[in-house]
Image (cartoon, rainbow, N blue to C red; front, side, top):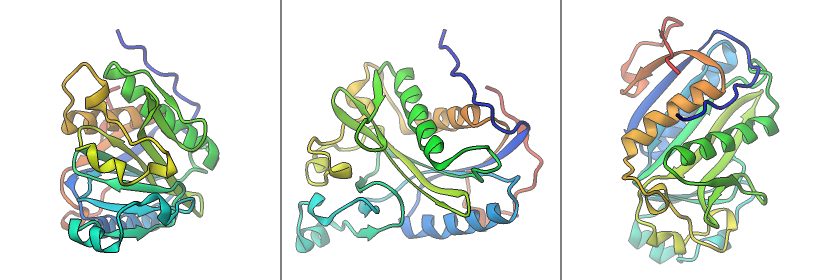
Length: 247
């Protein structure tokens, strides 16, 4: 029986609105994230989570460098890999189909969390996820992220504005790993690995996405979770009514 992780002493009876959106263009994600950050900053009793994949492309955070991207401009254009410099922690990250991107929009002060503790908790979520697939993973001691068998399997890069979190973590489920020789995740000299490469089980993106939602809800103390599978531009604004979260 899988041991349930200890739940930190966060504020009780909190509701989470989760958007499980499948493939989402990165610019569309940024627009949605801006809206959710604005909403959460105005009502700190709310919290949101985006779970999605992105088309191929590269993001580079505040600790990143262009030297971590080996292809030149012409080759990047030929591969149709746009490069975006984003205001999050961490360095370079190659986004590919077969990943799960997890972007919590949380009022950290309402959860009694510092930014540093929040990053630690996200890494713990990724470690717990790996364990459920038979993988022994550890937080990277050099930079936020998680390693399995010596290679990074999850990237963590967050930003905090007015105590509201954005961006988050990206975990490799079953992407094509060969392109990760060309983009050094957070400057790491070794290419990234994946859940599928390291696990004895068959791993599916949909299953990982659902389990990641459950782990996030449990670890951060959300007892009520509303789940939407459509972009919120096509939905009414979420209310505080939700179904109880079954942990």
